[in-house]
Amino acid sequence: MELLLDFATLRVIWWALVGILLIAFALTDGFDLGVGALLPFVAKTDEERRMVINTVGATWEGNQVWFILGGGAIFAAWPFVYAVSFSGFYLAMFLVLSALILRPVSFKYRSKRPEAKWRSFWDWCLFIGGFVPALVFGVAMGNVLAGAPFRLDDTMRAFYDGSLLGLFTPFTLVAGLLSVTMLVLHGAAWLGLKAEAGPVQERARKIAFVAGALGVILFAVGGLFIAFGDMGFRYAGEVDINGASNPLRTAMVAAPGAWMDNYAKYPWMMLAPALGFIGIVIALIGMKSRKEVLAFGGSSASAAGIIATVGASMFPFILPSTADANSSLTVWNASSSHLTLFIMLGCTVVFLPLILIYTAWVYKVMFGRSTTTALKTNPDLY
Image (spheres, rainbow, N blue to C red):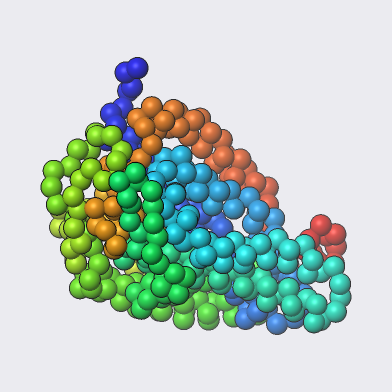
């Protein structure tokens, strides 16, 4: 069957779509994680903590849809990437899922009993459910940039030679802490939009300035690691961008500094890291001037720019291998078939707009600030 788009174009489209889904997850569930990580520090009384929880209480479950869509898209469009990453990073993913499981339990059980110790316990569980995933997601992205210790044999079976502790290196910890500061800033900006004016907003604003300053420093340090460290990969020969998916059909080599190649070849890609830095500055200006929409727009732009920087730096690599460079997975050698990508794109064109429309409608319906007064009158609040 003659398809409307060639194989290479479909591969690039799906590479971009996965990136968009990751950004959507960071922009929506990201502020939920940020609010959870901020909870013990911005709210001091039980009423304040309940009010903070209810700023995300109406939408946090729906926001996780983007996490599920991202995982599903990787499974369907990049099966080799899914197989290697979900098996090799199994313990890290188990850690993330364990922390995420704490969130729904904490939301549902926190206010079931009035004892201070009971509620404080679940508040700290919400902190763990926000901080740990934010940290591990960043560490995971750092490991993607640095490369993973896996190899493929002649039958394309994957063998992973790493360990959980091996995921935590100086560079990946910088990436993890950058992720935490990025989402804490985003969460603080969300509290500016959704929390009532008062002590909670003021505490969130102070923390946001610290998170923003650390975010600029960590993003810059991460860039120095990428530019002058020992990470980076390149193709060593000709590339057939329309060829069949086979991770072992081309030669690749480790090349320190190669992640800077795309910025020289495509200068417009510099927009991604620039947006990461500028977004933080805009967010802090919005915080300083108490313009909540500007602050939230800036934190959103920063998160999008930081995540896009990873994709722009690595393209066409998706998951490079430090154990065997020739086993590295790229846009050109690790995708599903031409027909599969085409059919999935058709489904995406139909259903993604419906998800966006429904999400926009939900946020419109739930628009408004969370207040301590409402806690006394609305029995549906946490």
